[in-house]
Figure (cartoon, rainbow, N blue to C red):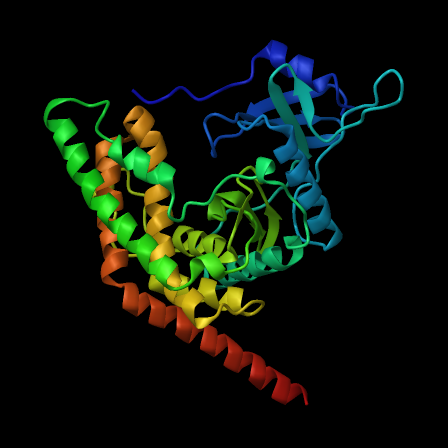
Length: 362
């Protein structure tokens, strides 16, 4: 059975909203999407629309880090939703951007109207360009190891979850889980080795978003209207974020039948995303070569943890989902050289366009 999504109770909602000066509630509607462990409500009052979120991660240091980053991005005119502070207490003190009640942490944002990613060249390039700007502008933010999570590259946890993949099912399903887990472990280890040999451990690390995908973005025409969800911030090479963005913006999915998800990725969108990124930042040769393997690692890492725990991935049967991941990871491994060439060509074309623009300006 799939896990029941978390929800707000009426009592909880009233207890939370009394800490904010947003006026009487006219409507409270659940917002679907994102983690089922982190419920969200669109709150409508006479003062406007707001988004209330109960965080899955209740570590106040991580929330403080996320809010500091969002404030910095707003100063740079980067499109993010504004966090709302709580009311002052009776002594006129302790107005905070995160509300703690018991063991739970809550955030309230101004609600942003926008459209979802449409797969166009313009929005794909914009998403890559904004990721590069994000990497540039958050680099100076300080953080501690306690306030960040680990990356998916060469992860002991991923390997442990793969090894545990067949512990819940029994019989023939258990055997099938173990077989696909063994294949994915081989692909994951091969990709990790390739990335390490390209010098991953020597590349600078900084704060990265950790969840750069279309579901966390709102657009107005071809411009990014708002970047959402800063729950996955962690310390890593920016190439980890870039690889995840490339994966998320090029994956071909959507059919309810997982068996009909093609193994291939959309190489046109891969090129557009990379061109957008390279308008601001150009990775070096080794980093460009690492991207197909990093895409393989993040694809596998994202799937294994929930399936190892529950034998499901959201509404999908875990075994069928892992078979789909196996097909896609195998395609990435088989097309590693072609994809590396595609990324290098996209970077070169972007650099040539920059040079032509400079010559025209002179």
